[in-house]
Image (cartoon, rainbow, N blue to C red):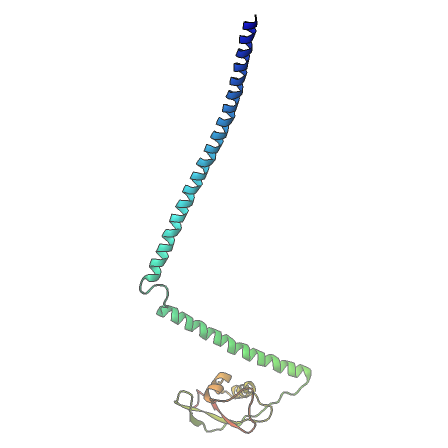
Length: 197
């Protein structure tokens, strides 16, 4: 009987250890399967990243080719320059319009405050004067002697009121070296008139 119990004990031990080993093998297999799935996911992600990198490299190459072509996007066409010139002229027209609107508003404020605005009579010569302008071409216009309290905006406005279309910029261009912030009383300046004959 001892032999049977001994064999029974051995048989139980073997069955138990094989069950434990089988359980460990199943757990190990599950871990292996899980890791294998994660590796496949990572490989797929790497494949997608490689495709994106290839697409970006192609775009960079195409852009580089465009920049290296003669007459690429690094120069302006005649149409671009004309469009830019038109835009600059429009900005200048708006600036002049804004200047005129500001002068009108200042006059309204002077009237509202009861301050008599210095109405300055410009001595617009009945005969036009000719002088060489900044470009060296003869210009026709008027000679004006600066009085106390004058500024170029007021002078230009007074001449415009008399029908002479002139701007501050035109007065400055016709009088090189004239400092609009420091007008010297008694100094004579030239007021250009494009309409004078």
